[in-house]
Length: 369
Image (cartoon, rainbow, N blue to C red; front, side, top):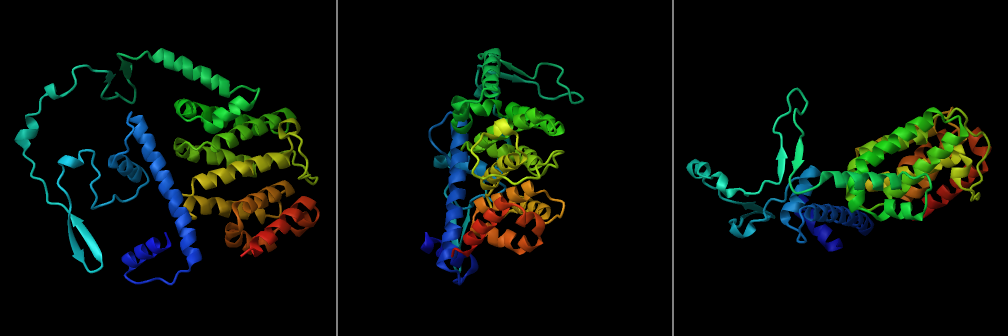
């Protein structure tokens, strides 16, 4: 991998770059994660098309969804056998691939009749909506009972919404992909509505316990390896950040016992609520890390640093932000956290054993080479 990356850099820039092996290893790790994500999404498209063979078209669709330029010079069509191959021209150290234009004869295109289509129509869809409303039922399935699917979805959704959280629900949220994909929009919308209600009435202990329950469920959901969840991060991330930075009416002024194993669902402790939010935020950052320190990641870090340095920030939020940076590793701490540690309210730092303890761990973490 080291030699391959060096070859790619020399091919792009025309000369060897003075990059250390550590830098190349760091790039190769993220490159491996990106390739794994692309292949997983491509396989998802292939399975949706009821195929077991991965085609180049699947990869091209994934690249297009991620706004990545296509791989010019490679045959990627599902009808590759009938397509002419690319030709190449060498310009210095670079290779240019090209293909001759295809002559289009309109008379041949117009001669295509409806006989080429399938005789059995399985799906009827109204073409246009008048003034934004479908005057007729938009979808009619001829050979599939849609009511059965709706009943199954409602049963599965009711199962995941059960207040008796158990290991079965945990495994479904963490591991299920096929069935979960069918109800994911409704499930996330249900979480959002309930979390908003809990935050509005956060002064009540019962609502804080419910909030901890919903945050726990979202944490398990973000552990799921299904790539379709990444499409809903733009909905989940504002929910989590709101719970993370929310100004609770009753914020605990006391210190936090990090060794306390009592369930947060039974206590409704503000410190624990912020830690649950921080854990979910960590999972979101790791799932969205397609590009190293992209705009989304930097905006979240900037917002957290801003809250960390405010004099009005409660001790529970200071601890939760430090907890997040500690879990993200030494490189993130060195880049984003260390320059702003001196701006934290020293009175709150020295009055909390939990904050002092986590600052010591961060100091040890950043000294590791």
